[in-house]
Length: 282
Image 1 (cartoon, rainbow, N blue to C red):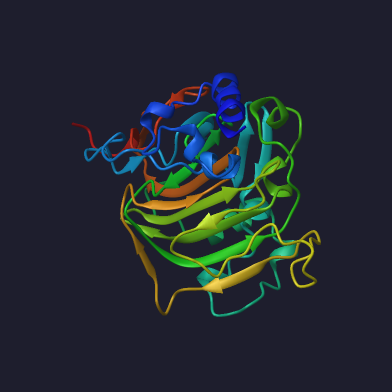
Image 2: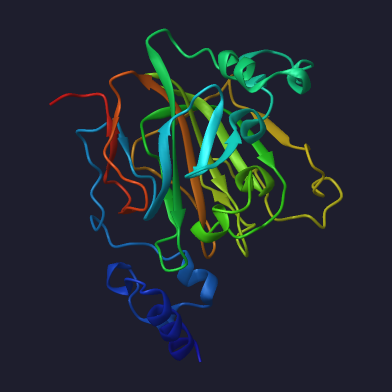
């Protein structure tokens, strides 16, 4: 039954099976394996002109400058960097930030130590059920810290994102913090309905979607950290970074000069490796 059932799924969600390494549906062991299908070599080209490229096939939910520590989930629906990334322990030697609970969003924003002349930007990419479900590095950067937030698995579809405030703060997510050529850089994979399992290729220790385990049972505000500062992980632009099941979201929060320009639009369908933004003028 795999071929007819997967064929129905392909038809419903307009999956581009011809782009996959394996085009015969009966050769996939299950639906999960089909979601995680590998693309043919060179089917996605990584733009070399721009510093930042799209991390995944999907739709741009929102992008722009981060003002006073507040991000837009979609137009008119906000959430804070503070609650999305948690205490800035990657900027210190302490394991806990005693001031975190009392920090305003503005104070947290200043604590990110954005360089003079730079601004903080963000972009949200939503992966629909029919999209290619492996995600890639959007830039050349270095990972210094990982934070895993066990959480809910609410749908992150554009319709749901428009009416649930702080959706990305509620859902299970794995955030990686580090630096790129312009300063602070973070890459967060957000879980969703049926997508609690998030696999990161350069960090095999992280375990998501294991709420049955007493150490990872979801409690609001609880998170689990891994410090890579002594042995940072270097990631190349376009490098395969991880995978989802079904559909989910990638959120980039990063520092860049004032002349940084996005090359995308809200609700635009994008493909991995295409230009997302650049500081270059020519």
